[in-house]
Image 1 (spheres, one colour):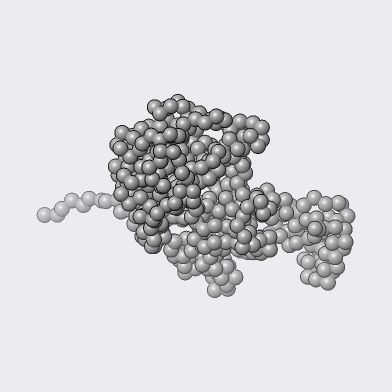
Image 2: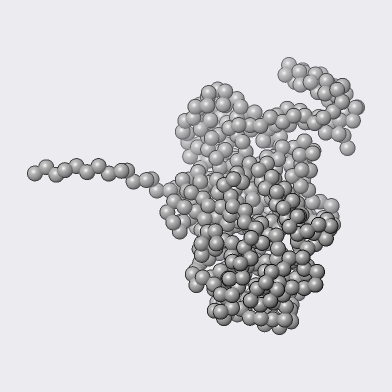
Length: 479
């Protein structure tokens, strides 16, 4: 007897292997999401009492590269970057005045006004770094006061919190394994160093869930413990829980958050929900320094994305600069290093235009593409991936279609506008200077290098410097 034939839809291909270095374990692990095909990704956002410096922007280029890599592998990525507009004191160790108070007093306005101003500036900076902000939720801490109070109340009811002279504190001695992130469990935390002393505080590592209002506090709310404001750490736990659930796939941030902020998040989140782990994969990026020194306003080495643009650099030169190093590697910023990154990106854009014309936008697979994907999926090895990309686009062993296919994948992962290179105008200058620039471009096109050098000198005599940028000449006033 002949059995009937039943057609079955083909099973979806399993997602590719992606390896990530998990701060929780200290090693590289195979990524396995909580729900098949979906990824919840939370990134610690800025405290919007001031503009975000270029150093502040590194974590978001890193988390965006991660999100791109996961999305390119077929995952649906749900992203949250919180906006801290209350609760973060001038010391990360729960000490001093609220940063929003500081910013409001500095500018003679309200915390709400500066929060709006600098949140918008931050989101605009992300957009200029080719980060799709429309695909990210940006919750503000002040919008989730009720959720923060509810979580703190739950912790108190469960015996994880106690009242002290200045607020409600989390009792770290009640949470087994406090400090497990970064292998800090059992490490003595000294008051006055990484944690702040307070009257009635039981243990050095205990942290504020709710603070009683003090004279001069510009932001206050009613709560079961009296009028006041939330601690900094609880906002991330409350907002991530409200938007992504009790357990997350990935949480990212700067390495400076490991010791206190992220260990506090783990303790209060797992204690409140009774579910562990709060986060399956913790990923942290290293710092940015300036010519080997710590970035500090007192040292005069704090720069913003607008400063780079004013000097004639494209914002994506900063993204390229970050991608030249692995996210866990400290990076030292200098103007010469940025200029080199800008020039390299310019050459890559030029090559991409040529490949697009030669391939007519038709893509093909290649061994170079496989090599590129392998490096990106091995803990976001962006320096090695860029090496593969450069070698392939310069090689004669690959067809234009194969190169274009690689460029499409590279754009999906790196976010450098490789498939649609931007144009960039030269800086404003007097008519005679712009005429000399045009003449020099003509000499370069004819490969008359002697004339090009002579014209460069003529431009310099008029107080301008001309550099060969990604989309043509970049003029700056000579210093």
